Structures are given as C-alpha cells and as structure tokens.
Image 1 (cartoon, rainbow, N blue to C red):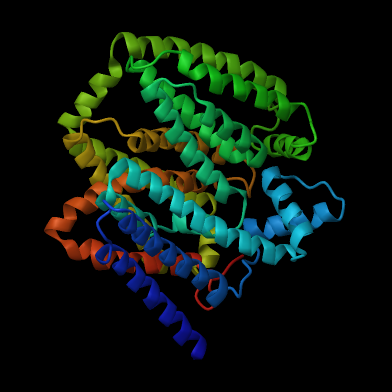
Image 2: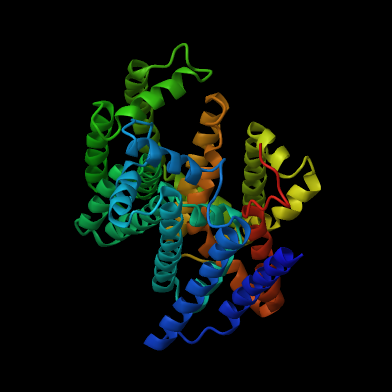
Length: 460
C-alpha cells in the first residue's frame, strides 16, 4: 500500500512539474529567465528519471533491455571476452569510469544514464530556444516529454542515449553548413565521434545527411560539393568497419550472421552488397537529374499545399500502417507486456497517439502557413524515408532484429516535436487546457508505459 502511495505521489509530482513548466516559465529575454526555464526542465526530467529508476525499478533497469545487455557486455569485456558491440565508445567510456570509481557496472550504467538524460534534454532545449524562441521551444519540449518513444531511450543507459544527441546535433550542424556554406569542421568532428561511439547512430545520421542533401540539391539550393566531405568520411568508415579492425571486429561478424540468417541469407553476402551499391547509385543519378530538371519537388510541394488535408491524412494512414506492421513483427512482446489486452495497449499509448496527432496537425499548419525552411521538418521527412527502408529490412531480418522502425522513431521524435509544437501554439489560444493539463496527463501515461512496473506490465 505504501509503495503505491509513493508511486502516485511521484506521478502527481510529474504532472505538477509538467504544468509548472508551462505556467511558471519566465520571459526568455534575460539570463535569469533562460536559466529559470532550463532549471524547470531539468527538474522535470530528473523527477521522471527518478520515478522509473528509483521508485519503480529500484535503480537498475532489468533484462530484457539494452541497458542490461550492455551491463553484461561490460562484464564480458572485463573478463577478457570479445562480445559483439555496436557502441564501442560507450563501452570504453564506462570501462574508464569503472577503473576510476570502482562502482559495479549496473550502478555505473544507471548513474551515467541519469546524467546523459538530463544533458540530452538540456541540449535539445537550448537548440529549440535558439531556433524557435522561448514560447515555441517550451511547447516543443513539453510535447517531446509526452511520448514514450523519446522517454525510454532518454532514460535507458545505452549508447543510443548519446547517439541521439550526436544525431540531433549533426543534423543541425549540416543544415547550418548548407545555409552558411562554411567549412563543416564541427560536423566532421561529430561524424568521427559517432563512428567510434555508436554505429547505429552513424547510419541514421549519414542517411539523414544524404536525404537532406538530395532535397537541397534537387531544389537547386546547393551543389554536390556539400556532400563531398560526409561522403569521403563515410567511405573511410565503411573501409575501417570491413577491415576487421579492433573496434568493430566482432560487430562485423555479427552483421554477417544477421544478414545470412535473414530470409535473404541464401544470396546475401558482402560481394552482393558491393554489387548493389553501384547499381543503386546508378539509379539515383538519373532520378536526381530528372527531379531537378523538371522541378518535380517544387511541384509536389505546391500540390501538397493546395491539397494539404488529403496530403496529411495520407501521411497519417501510411504511418499507421507502418506501425501496425511493426506491431505484428514483435507482437509477442506487446502481447506479454499488455497481458493480451488491446484496450490496455491503446490507453498506455495515448501519449504517442497524441504526439502523432499534434505532429500531423502541426505539419498541416506548417505546409499551409509557413514558407521559411525548417531543419526540423526536413529532418522529419528524411527520417520518414529511412523509416520506410528499415521497415522493409525488418521484414527479412531474423527475430530480435526486426524493431528498426521503433529505433528510427526514437530519433524522429526530437525533430518532430517542434512541428507538433506549432499545433500546441495554435491550441493555446483556442483550447489552452489541452496543452496545460491534457498533455501533462499524457506524459504521465507515457512514463507509466515505459516504467516496466511489474505490477502493471509483463515481459517475455
């Protein structure tokens, strides 16, 4: 009984913090206002992290989870073994901290996870505030904290925590490079760091950079020169990855196993991959030429603006179908977690549904009313294209490696929140209670959803 009283008290505190984050914010035109707002956000995030880690899970996130997997990986590395590692930089960093502090790996992962969670949200908020202004940035952060697709990777101690921050920063830096035409030194540093830190995040960032460049190139706003440095670095990274060096030696073999055990296994190998890459590039070149020559993208955007409702509904339907497909691919996990109760699943997903609805309405407002280029909207489109690719890959990859859409959505939320924030700004004048009270309530539901509370959820 006392345990439930503590849980309810903390959830009430989360709700109050989310409400206070919107109602107590100071004007952001002075240093004390910026610091106060940032402090409110940090306190809100800290309460959320404490609820999951300390109140529900007693400090440690248990298996099955990536954090538990990496605790085991760290234990194996300390014992002299060579496990498959997708985030070598994370392992190296924690091994250094382990030798310095003497803490066990589970506690160390937890403490690092708490620090990174706060740092990640602080960096995102600072970028929002700089790009969007005080009011829009607060709405965006509140919306971001309402979806479990961001909360879980934010809280869980694993390489993707820092990887998300690096992808977010890398995309913003690349947009700044496209806008200002300055030498992308900072972007180069981010790409190098992310290669050594987390290979999945590198794939996401590199894919986004190419798609964003392709969009700008087809719109005749940049040249091939702006892709040269990222392309050269990625070619170097691929060569290093395939060379079986010390960094990704076991990971290379793990990728080969994953591909060979997939439904494409009988014909899949590195030789086939090396053949498909130039064929793909040969197809991309004429398509890019045709899109640019006949100005197909401007015509598409003009068509989207003139039929915005149909366009947004279409995106919503396609996204819904993609999530349904993802649900069936890992239905055993969802069935176990929600005790085969679809209604329970929907209730616990209301935060994600609300986030998606805000994004769609915000996209409608952006398409019909905004004319200025937004790095956030462009990044959302890039990740949606990647989402189509990874859901296709999930259909053929073996069990346990078919949740790539969810992982892609984790990154997408950071860029989608400002677009959904447009919808919140509109509703703040028409129905302010939606943002002030309903959104914090949805955030509480999402927090419960990711808490892995054994009294509420089951796991296979």
